[in-house]
Length: 622
Image 1: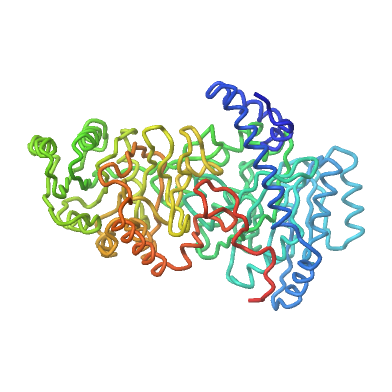
Image 2: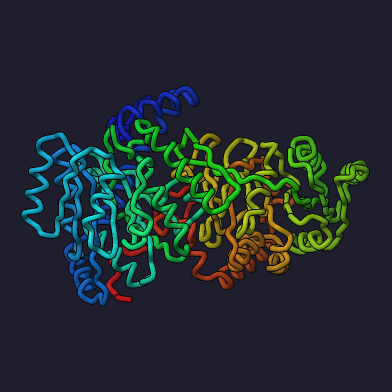
């Protein structure tokens, strides 16, 4: 068994040698040498793929630069952008490259505000003074005392005169078209208060890797980690009104700033640019290397989120996720919890049904629920005997519905007769894993503004079946991270983080009954396929956020009682339902705001799109 020849480089690009070795050791203990080799090979392949992707789709040509220059000249609004950069004992090469990345900006109306935080290295001040002497757009302030990044950034803010603030770390790089795309975003969204872009990492040799292609604004994902991060651009007045960066939050000072901004602005004023405009330097002391060397950053982030939730009056608290270096917010249930009606359609699946109901009744810690069992024409003798045997359990109510199978119709009818103010939809082939699964889902469903809530579902072989639904996958929709092995975190942790998502599977779905009724329940024209996707999109259309939580976990023996689309009749019905979804939801299916146009619609693994669904340069104006 041979390691890839460039495994050493792959390890460096994964976050530095020391953190990579620790990751390899943990992986070796869990999966052995084969797991380590597989991971390094994957890192190597991803790096090669991304380098080719950059060459094809993220490299500016002279023609592209000309188009950008023409676009800039046509802008009627050309505000000054203040790039704020604190420095402290920066290595000469990195400081030079950071400053040069600003000087090379295609959009010329910028100023670079540098605050040196009392550097002790002799080269720093002369370098900065030389650059300032060569370009009057570079402004300097030299602090007398070392105050750390928040204090230094605030010193730089004091000399900033631009209408917008862009934050740049002293060892990172801006893409040469970064500020152009910021102005392009403002041309489309002149009311924007906060703008953020995609980002990647760059090593000491200038090789780019590990791109984070982000989704559009996603408040719940933001509470799980700082998805804004780089490049973050803020309206200056907003930042100054908040008092700038807060000392005491070092390592998460930008996270704390963004959280405080959320309390002042409308979510519609947050704009995402789906382009890599910021290159985050990887070196052993950087946060980009994995935060293992900066544990204080994780604590500062937790403090910032908790204070934000308290200011908003939210009954939630944050817990750091040490393995991910991210966060989980727990929302508390009220003292008097609502009755939840768990609706379980079934037909002739006694083995599955017995396991499903048994796991609910024996494991579920949330006690105030009823099970509404919808029997859709069972005629198997053993199934009928089992149904008769459980009729004496006061928690189980059986509804007989012998109409031809129409999932939407069965659900709508059952909800109408349910007593609970919260509805839980469950397939009869589920098996509870986490006893507090229902408590977790209901805690989200009761939050203001939340619509449907979905769970993390596993196949019996411990590969992932459901972590939310991504629109546009293979035409209409597909499950995010499908077949990910248990223990895998997903794309930037997204299989393991609470987040807003457009759609969820109805195999395990919780929603308030009033919300269900408000949007008219399930569309009965969609008998089998996509009725849950359509339902969730209508919930979203009504102004609610749908939530995926990985902390409600169940096994799912998918479609075990209904089978595959294996007949001409079923395939025709599936085709009609697919056509309906494309006609009803149109472009949304190709522009899922919880996904990225730089990621594939051919697979469910968040791999790169070839080509991306966003052009390198758009020649037309707005």
